[in-house]
Image (tube, rainbow, N blue to C red):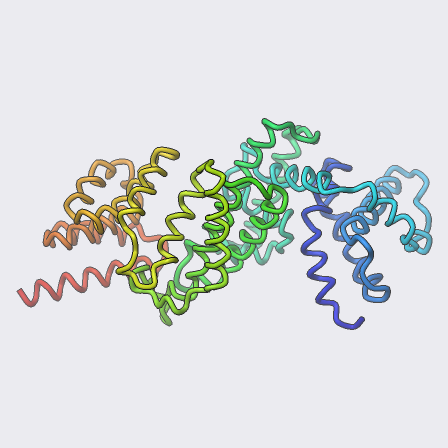
Length: 417
């Protein structure tokens, strides 16, 4: 077999299970990661010649574990393991290892690995960076490029995260039901954070961060395989798919933002939308609503509208009100105001968000929305002040350019008056 792309795909798919199992054995992230890399090198040599093993994950765990034990023994000046030629004959051993492993083993190992990356003492940026390095296997260079920082800065960030985890004396036992629920919530939030790191980028940054959305979707699929009956995981998966389906229509050729109402819906990924709609419909049949399901239901209403004017804004407002009940937040209220404007007008929407200004004084989108509402009400001077504030808070050049477009429209209105 000369084409080794299938080997790369198999190694990427197996990585979370293998690293999770090796972490359980050795209780050290560096040791687990190095053992996995050694197993991958052996796989590239062996699989290309002999074809895939019966259970690639079991094969990698067995080889990685023996490799790490060999290193530990050599460092301790103990007797080394048998020669590589002897260890390479894995056919019988692989079968025995595979028989001992089941879905539950893999599930607990992956959950443990993901939860460790979500250590509560770590800042969110370190959680994401560590998950992308340990769970997803992205290189430091890839992660640094996505976060727009230097490789050395990202290396330090990951090193600090590992050191903090190493000093945390975390338990490695299989989590009980309560811990499992707590860990699942933390892991889900981490996956969503990874997605947002990619989704929120704009302009020239969007291309570099685009793979983060794909990786978050891959991790969400992994969670869904582990918890196939959990409606909130279905909701998370649906939300990511429905949001990412609009990627090709979100920016113009110059990297400028295109608002949802103005997007070419023919560019939306219909396959992703179909999968997302099926998932959210399935999740809602469980009648156990949660924040991800509600957000996915909102995205589904946008996806189902053939034209912007067909959007059911009244239902979207109701869903945002439900989301406020689950997760009270000024950001949720700000999003609800957009729906309120569509249903009841700009005056009601402005009245809803004005009490939020102190809490959102450093938030770009607040002043962008406020300026747009003031503009619709003909309060142009107040709108200019809000737009100027938004530009000062813009996170990307694309955000700033979008607000300048509004200012230009105000200038033209003033000139024609």
